[in-house]
Amino acid sequence: MEKKGLLEGKTALITGAARGIGKAIALRFAQEGANIAFTDLVIDEEHGGLETERELSAMGVKAKGYASNAADFAQTEATVKQVVADFGSVEILVNNAGITKDGLMLRMTEVQWDAVIAVNLKSAFNFIHACIPYMMRQRDGRIINMSSVVGVHGNAGQCNYSASKAGLIALAKSIAQEMGPKGIRANAIAPGFIDTAMTQALPDPVRKQWVSHIPVRRAGTVNDIADTAVYLASDLSSYVSGQVIQVDGGMNM
Image (tube, rainbow, N blue to C red):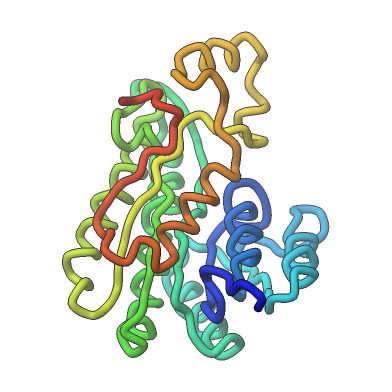
């Protein structure tokens, strides 16, 4: 008898998933049998969206990418409506869309602050707000906010990013309390130093310095995050809600 995947028959909506951590989560969810709707600013060859769509479809699940600005409230509502029309339901939401615009507080511009808060935090509100009516009707919803260790501990030069990621934690905890009676769980993942295009751009000495501070002595992989997301999206975590899981190799204990 073929073993059923942990997410068989579920539809997952993942934001910012054309590449990086979002894409890894999409592929891992598909491995577990979930159908995948994903968003990114553009879905084309250049930015990886179409390639991601093809890779997911090749795994035998239904998959579709949607070009959408997650920070736009009305656009998000329309996107979610379209996803439900195309897929029939949405049980899992992963709020992964995120950007950085780092700078020290004295030099940070209002534009840098607003952009990061809008894309990282407001987008999660937009998607939760749009998905919750469907999840309530199904009495089945699993929401995962992609936070960061800097959302737990703060980080000099990243006031905007840290504040947005801390906001995602409090948002998940509040939704967990508000929506628990309706069959909806909400949690956050706080990745540490993860090997992505973003961190690979750092100079080698800086990367080595980071890794030397991590007790397990390696950077995390996107699959480390994706595996944690599978746990939170599946029934393995049916009694887990309002939690933050730090996936950081012990860096911030």
